[in-house]
Image 1 (tube, rainbow, N blue to C red):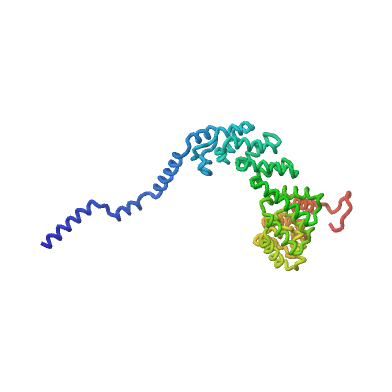
Image 2 (cartoon, rainbow, N blue to C red; image 1 turned 90 degrees about the vertical axis):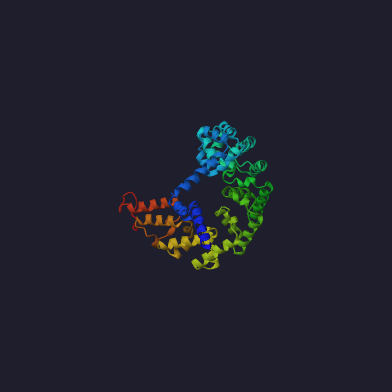
Length: 395
């Protein structure tokens, strides 16, 4: 009986297994299926899912304005999911300013979040920007170039107060409009904070020996070159100035450094300045006094980080330029290795060996270098005897 029972149980098990899928076979079928099918299915599902959740009216209105919806989906697709938008209203405001269809489409493609701004807020922003622009044509041009700055419509009352404050300081509207586009953060800073920073800069200038007569000109020039100074803290500015004084720089020399570095000195912390100075002292094997003279000739030695300085010195050495030559003309460190290589090769084409001569020909802006190169080229091509000009024996 036991044997029969075992036989019956075995038969029942076999019959049951016939109707169960084999896991190994199922796994093999999965492997044999094309690998790209799940990916495409997933991709289609994701796209369709997003498209289904988009605000259809918003998409249709943008299409009518010839806006590239694909670009918006790729960069800031969340805008198309918003329930409340002001596509037509924002477009009308831009058109009233004189923006054509192409300009409107370009602005909305680059800054699609503009359609989330309420029309009253945008009109307020328009009035503020118009107060420092020559005309509407210039305003449209600025909006097209810097749409995100224009459509950042928060803190509008604070923005207005800051514009008025900068006008009272003596800034021209063209400078303020540049601030609005490229340094818009300073207008969102509380007006009290900006006033405090201005006072700190004025006090620092006077404490360093500057005169009250020249203070306004100095301040306007400094901020025109680098308005981001206002984002610093008053404590950090005082800390940097005290550190430079501890390094042996006189008040007059610190003022020189501030002017040459266009205020970027205030954006450096004492530790980074110390690291750069220590590296330069070791690289040039000089005394503290000599190092200070090098810094006054090339203030960028304070500004550049150690890796940048190391890369530029190594780049000059590879071109056969000696440490002694760099010490004599340290401003050559303001050039990137790529620029140095290009200029050395160009001078070599005229037979001028930079490692045997002065680095003055290598130095300077692109315009200055081209002028020096032209002089060398003319000198090399000048005839031995010129009846008009006196003979130069050296030539």
